[in-house]
Image (cartoon, rainbow over all chains, first blue to last red):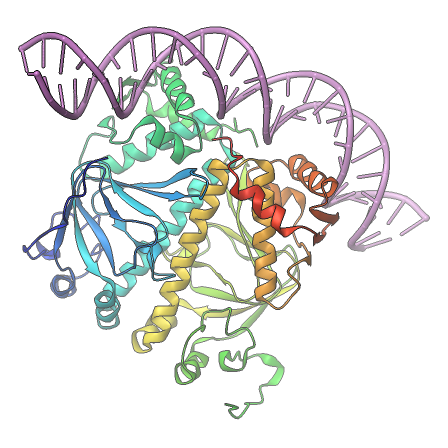
Length: 246
Length: 246
DNA sequence: CGTATCCTTGATTCGCTTCAACATTAGTGG
DNA sequence: CCACTAATGTTGAAGCGAATCAAGGATACG
């Protein structure tokens, strides 16, 4: 664990209307006019170093965050030390929604690499979304999407076997990299086998073995964190044919 | 604090200000004044018979629903026939939030017993929550709470063993019955072993065996769907001591 | 009162975990 | 730049928890 680094807030005013992540982020689908008003909303940017946390469970909730660069994981801790990764987030995605319900965060958000977020003060967001219909609607969609995503993960954890889970994970990552203009077939994972395992409800050894199996069968090429998908169709088939165990 | 009670024929027109579920439902925490405005929002009530669906995956999203009486399950289906129960909902809880993101529902909501819901047209909700700050805030809290709840389920599915899952489930049910003025220790489950299993990521036989085990050990008394919790402390201990397998 | 549904229990199988050893990569300081 | 060490990843062998298969019993329902 690195020593605590003071939070760096650079004075640069963020600007949604100028940002190239609009189609992935909160402003998606909003009109030019509404977009300009969004610039009032987004305050400062904040840089987070690898392994540092953006917020921790128990922290008072004040803002949500849009990832401008880098990536994060969120995890929940149990008293006994067990922890569970609840999600991996990439550029344009929103962090911190869990905090609204109790006004304090219920999970930890940790940077997987040196990252930067736009800070969106929640009080301002509520205020502005009372005036800007498009913003209100987009925000609701973002929350709803998170709920739907979580249901997908519950499905995965509750009814898929190890290799299906990993296949689903890889296809999901591929799809998200594609949406960001990267190759659908070749990408670099920012998380460890242990973190993937935690997210998928598996031990790291099981993740490693599943990777090896996929490689043997020519479905993917795996070199540590560098992944190349060689046969996406077969990966998809793994999910569709009922090979589940529950 | 008593306002004039409008005499509504047959309860066709719902009224949040008169409803005894306020502390559990969407209006929780809202002022008297704001509450009155809510009555504009909630349109008709709708009765759903046992085993009937309130909405199905793919249905166009138009409204969210507050459960006025009865209970529901939500489930997601995979192409191959596998399905996963994503939640059980009781009176005062909100159904349909999954529909906002794509404007069509992503799961099925099925009544576990003859039930009744208040229909809240979503367009109206957005409109009114631009005017009524308290409503906006409450709605956001409801969505956020759903996200936090889902993370809890992911934790359960990803890192607990069978008996821990069932213990968590029973304690959660107990807590929710208590909030509704019923006994914390004695209640009637509305769902089958198969549905509990699907929710907990277990087979129905495993659920049944875990129930039997709890009974043998004097933790609960089980007679089919009738549950009596005899030793809540031990159930809680089951969760806190790290007996997990992942 | 008969039938379908739901629940319980036992025996066996199987997939993932656990434990262990080793390989590889990344990070650090001389 | 290389030596050293910690962190991460891979692979094998054995054990265990839950799934599967199977049979019978209880309950609700028309």
